[in-house]
Image (tube, rainbow, N blue to C red):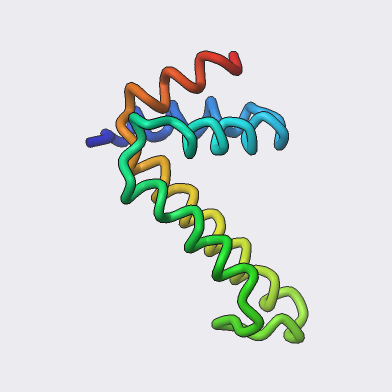
Length: 97
């Protein structure tokens, strides 16, 4: 389980990465056999939600329509990282630092 200081440290290190590096990090972790299946299952769910034609808040509502998609992506990626063992996240992060 992650403690508060460990979560802050990991999130700070991940936030320092470029967008391209973040995408590569998630992709490498998704392909890693050490990452549990339940963690990997989160990513397709995020993709399906974003691709679905209906949303919790319709996209035609200015700003709020896009913010719900961003919120689902952020929470989903956070859940993906939370469900992944810390050692695996650390191992992949070291490749980008």
